[in-house]
Length: 472
Image (cartoon, rainbow, N blue to C red; front, side, top):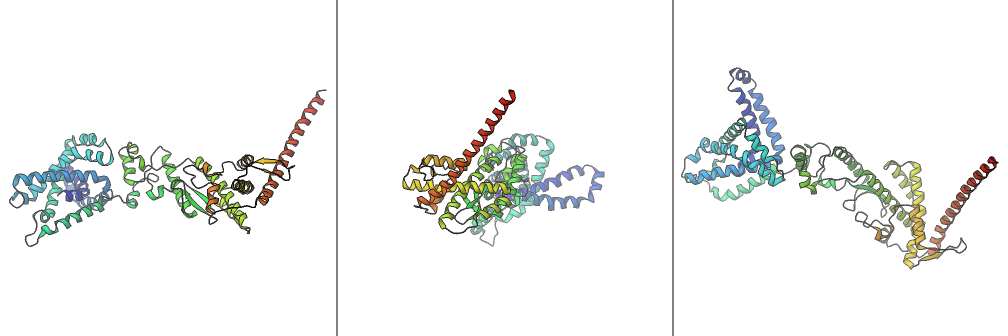
């Protein structure tokens, strides 16, 4: 009785719709004559529109189904005890008295006292109870609910005849467990949340599939191990897919950002998204673990640039250690221009800066492996430069780069230059060559800086002198 009532709950709105139509038509002879030709349309709409849609949103009706099942179970248990059981009572075999009576009882008790409590227990929505009590305080609604329950009970009770009374020529009690398991399986299939089906009912941007929500905060990074760009999730700290998947995810990100622009919340559960949208905004606080959040665009761009600088520096070091020709520059340039919308000038500037910085990074890593704190520059009057000074030069050349494991955070775990070089078991003892490469760029940069400073100073001096001469 309980499971049968719960399974048939999505049918009740259709019965109630027909009930309301007839309720207005029956007292009015003129309206009844006009309705006689369209009664088929009413029944068609109830059967082919309301019932399928009710089963489609069945998870929203689950608290109603449980409440109806409990009420029907209480009503049948009361009759079973007071009449002596189904075998000794003819009253229980009467579908109108028993089925209709239990249905009417359910139609009065469940909406008024149980619907709101069930919603509160299942979904934490507290304002359904006073709302249902206010609705049921209207006599018209109570009459419709009671009569709908009566009709549903009369229709359902014959279907439950054999499960209740059994079949004389069949040992039906041996199949009761199987029947009960089948009923639970059917109930699960009706009321379970289907991401595909129920996700289509939610507004765009209000719901994201759980497996996709982990990909929203993602970047395109250069996977140095295979020298290809792949999608990297900042949520799971792992490589998650191809550039094609990244483009698909970006469309979802765009819709979520547009939806959240109006201070709305996005969920990874379609049922919660519908409940939040139509019933209770407070559900966002009670189910905060199901909220979908996306990092600010500026913060994602900052992390993207940080990753590009770090990954490219590692890639240049690895490519030099192989002593082989590479299309790394062309690969990166094409990707930045086509996917990240970099201009040619911006991409070239990034490549030049990271390639130059990688020379200093390589030298620093060798010095750390050798335990050196400073080194002598051969082309600068044997000037000594410390490890810290080289590190400062690197960070000035490529701001934001992650050099060491100690600089890693929760979202940059394993992303530093040091961590990535460890993955390749990179060890270089060619200190003179590394020093020569970096020193050439460093000395040339120092010369250019001094020339620029001299030009500025000369210009200022000339301006001051001309001003003085003009005054006299």
